[in-house]
Image 1 (cartoon, helix red, strand yellow):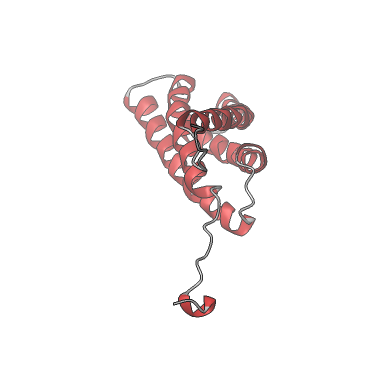
Image 2 (cartoon, rainbow, N blue to C red; image 1 turned 120 degrees about the vertical axis):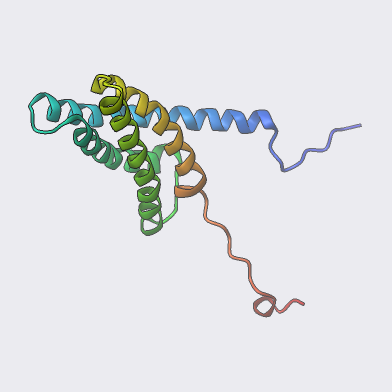
Amino acid sequence: MAREQTSNPRAGDVLAVLARQFLAYVGVSLAALAVHYALLAALVETGRAEPVPAALAGYLAGAVVSYGLNRRLTYASDRPHAEATWRFGVVAAIGFGLTWLIMAGLTRGFGLPYLAAQGLATGVVVFWNFLGHRVWTFAGRPVAVLSEEATGMR
């Protein structure tokens, strides 16, 4: 008896797609992190900013890189910029807050060196951002369901 194929993907296929997408996200994140860390180190090492505000400035600069590359490469989103940018901003703002909390707690509260603290903050925020952007920022737009009156069906 032939096995009937369904339109539902197998769990292994879904995991493979998710893994490829996460790897693309990690590649984009490395580019964004390079910008983030370069600005962080430049601001701290030149004495222009303390570690926490420097980390936040780096986060914002990296977010600009992240939006453009993730929209195109990771999620291949066709969500209009008018929708995607504010959604990206909300997810990024939460990540920004997490970065602040973690950096302040680790550098001020525990006295960790700023780069070690930033490494830990990055580890937490990368997962938050990936999931937030995958399920909300760049997710496919829901298809509008026509009302019964519009379709003529009852």
